[in-house]
Image: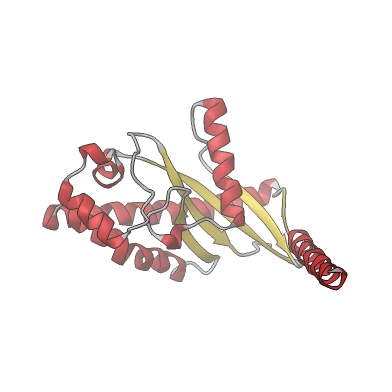
Length: 205
């Protein structure tokens, strides 16, 4: 018994050390005023470009194929449209939409995005409104980069696919269940906090 306990203890200790080292390697620090202004400009422009393009694609799909067509845009075109924004901006490393109530698994938040979601949710509870943006300066093993976040709220158009299931079209629900069997993205009301546009930006110095 003693021989089995000691190796197990060493294994647990090793895991804790690894986790501790990872936490030390990736830290969030305070951006300067100049950094904040530069990151905000890049992130805001990219976010608005993506959201405007997505809205246009969704509206066009609905006019052509109804609400089910909009589901196709989200599942087939959203990632492509997002990557196009990144491709045409050499300051941006990556970009995505993220939320705790995700539909597509590609939108699951990473550790920094989770902290940002918590920040927006806590701010909303205290102020009954959302901040316009949030910025993280991340120092990761001597590499510095930034993450810009812009909140997404539920608009009238969104309720067709993200609202109360009892008020949603059965054909739409069936299409969602087929494409996203583990869907978490329904039950929202108008103007609810939906999630974030997350833009990862290179060191701007």
